[in-house]
Image (cartoon, rainbow, N blue to C red; front, side, top):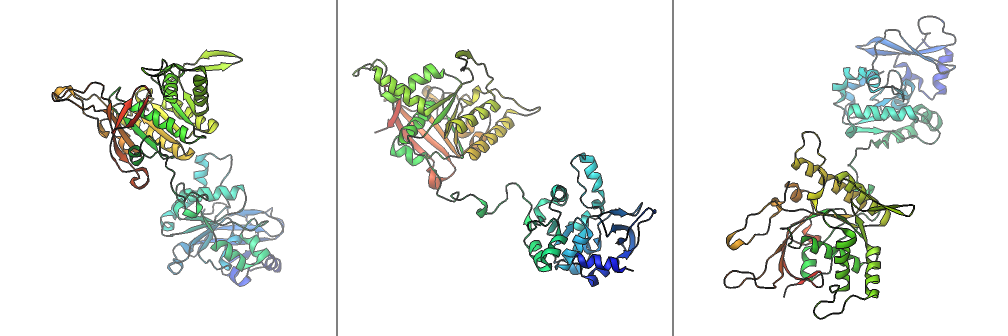
Length: 507
């Protein structure tokens, strides 16, 4: 039985009275006395019998429930109603919101028993306890292919969306955004009517699941042709080796066969071809300010310091110009470099761990606009393995972190990795190492987009001995993730010109 005041209250809230009466509301105060004013009670039914009631004071926002009542969804019968299985399951914070949504054309709607159960100060155990009632019907709720969470537009409502999506599975959960100045579903009904509320629910948005999106969600330009950098060393190199930002590469070969030299030349050539191109070099085996600088200057000037057999020694002008070019284009990453402060220089002593490298690479990319980072060599990194973690698993985890960094900051990260020991063959010749012979892990092949072996392969005389002075070098590309843009795997033969510190196309 409803009083005139209760009927007026429902009509003021935009609720259709005939619809509301189907849920058996009553004008009755909550038990226990001390209940001033007029109250409206909605029963929670289970097996057609009341197991709890929500009492709402109609002249001000006060709520109570039956002491010892069963905690359950209001109108939970819709979960099992086979006639409603084609509708999404809608969950609101309050009963009037639920009736409003039903009035808008979504009959498979139920309400939380006590609004949002979330609290900023609640522990995970407390939060879980407040939602324990859901466990009673969770298996039944799993039948719903789509769950729309119609929570209030406030902090507790947002927390409810997150909590329910976690429990019910975010893949099938949506949430309802309301128009400005509308806090909940009933507000929309009162201000704009049932049709506008229907539109809001129909346009519910999917709860975000990391990694799942539509192509239209990507920023403009992300569907453009892929960026591939070509070094210009020779047509053969450009045909096989394309450097792509957002990916990593691995460079291997027997020690002193030229893998670091070729990688350096590719980096320096890219800097020469593009005035704004910058590279960073994590040098773990050589001194950047002495050995790396000497190699870079010799490459840039094009002859040895003393001029070589037919050249002139470096001039002061050439040295200054080469140093300025090096300063503009190359950022050293050195665990044993110098740190300056207040005009004084102190020798740093940093452990070269994977965390250190990732932090340093990120800094070089963000602060200095670096596009290409090289780590030379991998074996000099200190392995900070987790407990029980093998070297193989450590390398796999580290390469995944490197790939994430490259992809996030749209840079290329190259890794120089030594092969395991290879026994000489007939005549003492050592064959070029393959991708699965890199020391430590097969992940060097599996987790990179480009793989290259650099191997000295001189021409031989009739006795099988290397011809004197022959610098022919094999560059074997054994991994190319994108043949159509990077170039297909294959072999390239180059000749090394030591006076110039660079490889040239083999004739």
